[in-house]
Amino acid sequence: MNIVIAVLLLFWGCIFSIAGLGNIFDLINNVTQRHFRFSTGNYVLAAKVVSKFTSSRRIIMTLFLIIICLELISAFSYVFAWLFYVMGRKSFVAYATVIGMIFPGSLTIGNEVFAYYENEEEHIVLLLAQFVTYVGYILIG
Image (cartoon, rainbow, N blue to C red; front, side, top):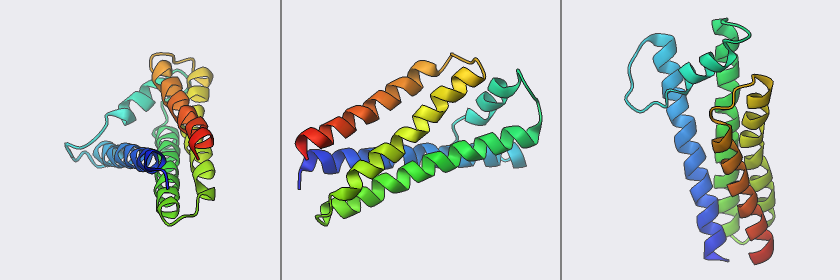
């Protein structure tokens, strides 16, 4: 077992878990008017991004739920890949990194669809960082 790969898998699992949890609390804050301190503010950003085309609360909420689902799927895939990796089953690492790249890739596509480029570089950097993780796994693994 390579410790670098194990740490990277756990790192990405934590990053996506924290981001997904923060977005869940942000959704709850905006739907119920409660105020959890641990929230991202991304719901308002998502509403701003899609406001060019619609202000439908249902559409905004649906798109935000898709974002949360993609984050959590990425988080679970990295955590499961880490668990399997430390148990000696390396085949899940490649799957997790590819699944993990779907999230920032879809956000980058969303930036283009909604012509919103304010956060595009963050999404591209996240995508590239995961790609580097994948290449690192291939080279080290």
